[in-house]
Length: 427
Image 1 (cartoon, rainbow, N blue to C red):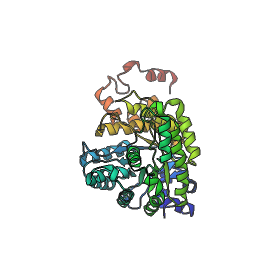
Image 2: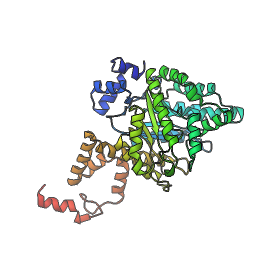
Image 3: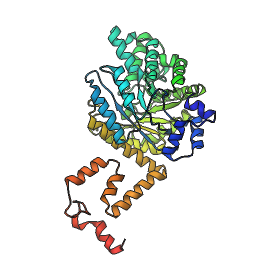
Image 4: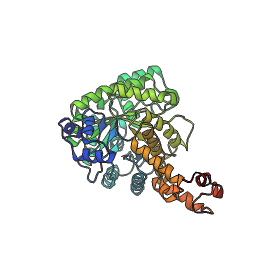
């Protein structure tokens, strides 16, 4: 029985109990939201040692970290280090996007070591193996795609990105309208190449029922991917993107009929003034299924600082109703991220998520900030470190720049505003 099926039957699962406790929400309310499709708990029954999290309306905004090998660099130990630092930095989920080295072993080790939900994009491995075995992705078959999906589900993957809404009709709309960057989704590009070469429909769309059978068997949450997400500001919110989103809304209802949990993936690169519109469209067209956004990045000219552009867009998107933020690292658009890049990406995206939680009225997020304000007023440096979103970095700055007096910092020293005013107000 999937989490969705259990919720619809009135059953509160152990996973629901754990999430309710973490979020400090009522168990029955949580069950009702899951039954309505507004919250998902990605929890493959084969993922041992998982501490589940809930994603969706009424819960705290969640953060995902992408890790994984590439064809140019495949070192398993590095990816496990990236997983470890992601968890330590507070990521709620991680995706293994490996395309190089021993992909099966990498995934197995990541799932085994991960206490948080693990996601993948199965078409990556299907294309890599097909290319190695037959010389090119045009030899990819539907059977190969679904064989890889089932293999990954058996290994305990909790959610998968599947670009089911990338149809021939959507591609024709894209061709007629034109774009600056065309298609930037790797999975979307793989499927588009195959579809155009064979003049056939997307197998993930054509055989969607087969996908749902596998997902229901393992309680594999589907993250319906945006293969036509905009890859630059100029392409945001065009007809192709919205056409795919409308298709995903239709596929969401079909998945729910089979008791399969669903999230929807979103853009991409979006200017600030279009972000709220994108969230409203997704929630309306996809029946309030949880929304998982990559950023969105609010400018195209920040290589080396794209994690900042991502956090700006992510904060606004989450305030408007997005539920799950996929991080971007400083290495985005430039190279495979290092362990330190991963840590920084998680922290910056968590700041965006927390800022949105405050704006959304989450009382626990608001209380944490209030406690920090009190600690600052009291010049309680140890408490400030405890409350900091990145205690390690905060403590590093303080230790490397010791003040002349223990209760102040080197910015103001003996002229500390808080210290001076506190003496007058006797507080």
